[in-house]
Image (tube, each protein chain N blue to C red):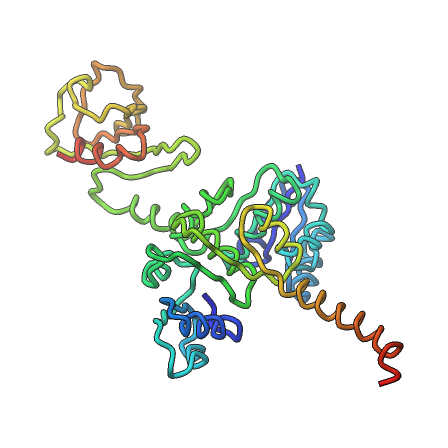
Length: 218
Length: 138
């Protein structure tokens, strides 16, 4: 697999380092000649100087045979154009962009970027997940299917304690997939009864997340 | 969007024709280019931010023009305006002829000053080359 990384900031640097050590064919494109020299000393000849938003640079980098292009610069407009050039002019199968302003994540998806990563959103969700007494925690978004994986903590005050799962009224498109009880993983059936301290893992449509929150935090 | 030489000149002439014009620019001091007789509005911020666009009244706009000094900024703003706010007419200036061709093929209404000016200068050179032979007698 040939991966093109654009932008030699912290993310581009560590990503290239990791991918090289895992044996991928990688080329990092960086604008700043000083960085190119430093990185070449560290990783070998896998760094090229150039502006990744210029078609000529992508051409020189061999974008037409790249399987994945990852744009990691600090400017969203540059990451968007790099990915669109890679996809439309060089027919790259999978383009991935770092999103600096979390507001742009939805926009990038609508404009055809296959994968978006917002560092801010990731940090927010980890912090949210670590807050004590959260009734429902968003674990993961499966963007291609508009689904989310969430975790609900069952407290001692929950009205669902001791009742079989089949009695708990949940939104229609929610699949309760697992219950973590202490150290044990339970695969729930309709007869499974909830206990205080249970962590319920469910797959839900993103639109039903709020309803699920209400249903379980009552 | 973009209150440089082109943006401010365009804004002033549209304003003089009686259109409702709002100008977006990141730098407040750029608005000085609009002069004292400009009747339109100004919004400080970047046009690649949905909230800034909303503040500028994008939801009521008939036309959006992106003439910033960064091609990628103009391209991204124009796509947001076209795809998300569905403004009927969006014009984008793109300096790089390669990017200009690509985004034209993707449905943006683009203007490329590089090819325009190169073409105009080329024409002038061709005209001048014919002048000495015909103008010698004058």
